[in-house]
Amino acid sequence: SEPIIFDVGAHIGTISRRYRETFPAATIHAFEPDPVSFAELARWATVDGKMFVHRLALSNAHKRMVLNRNTLSATNSLLRTDPRGAGYWGETVRTEGCIEVEATTVDAFCARQEIDHVDVLKLDVQGAELLALHGAQGLLDRGAVRLIYLELILVPTYVGQFKAHEWLAYLDGMGYELLNFFNPMMRGPRLLQVDAIFVNSN
Image (cartoon, rainbow, N blue to C red; front, side, top):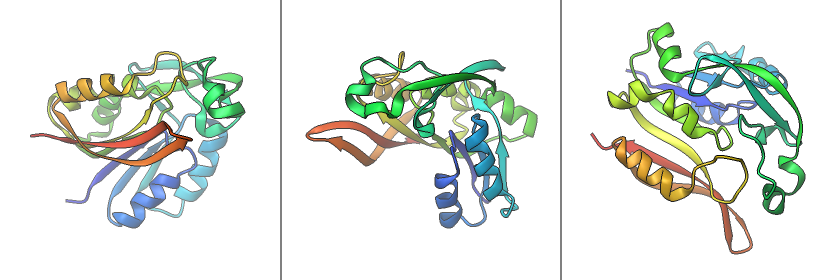
């Protein structure tokens, strides 16, 4: 069957487009809570009959949440910026304002849409990935997510973000093994962030 892909923190759809090129027949659900980024995402999605866009944050609860809007919109987050973040990223993570956004959980969304599994769960939600995974607990417990693609931020950037070893332990406990790292972002010898793919070990 054709893959079901969730692009969580889709921003303007750059990664969704790559998924579309790689998996022409996939059903893609793209989630982006910021209204400006969402407008651009939605414009592109209108020409793609199997891509569905949702102006939603995916988190650990079905409620209104505060989105911190930063100088660079790709760094917007449900988490507050760590004061130390600017030392690594410059002004890009400076918070310029906050808005209320609608949030739901992966489990609630899937129940509503009658989706029983997700082949690729891509999470790039700027430090709030753990909240989204907590909201996918039902699917994860059933092993109904085949692959998790995660951005791991390795320097203090957001208040409450997980450290790398915590991610490895958490996902191992959920039955997911690290497959590989991709797209390292460096500053001198320091690794700032890296993308990681975890696969269901069952």
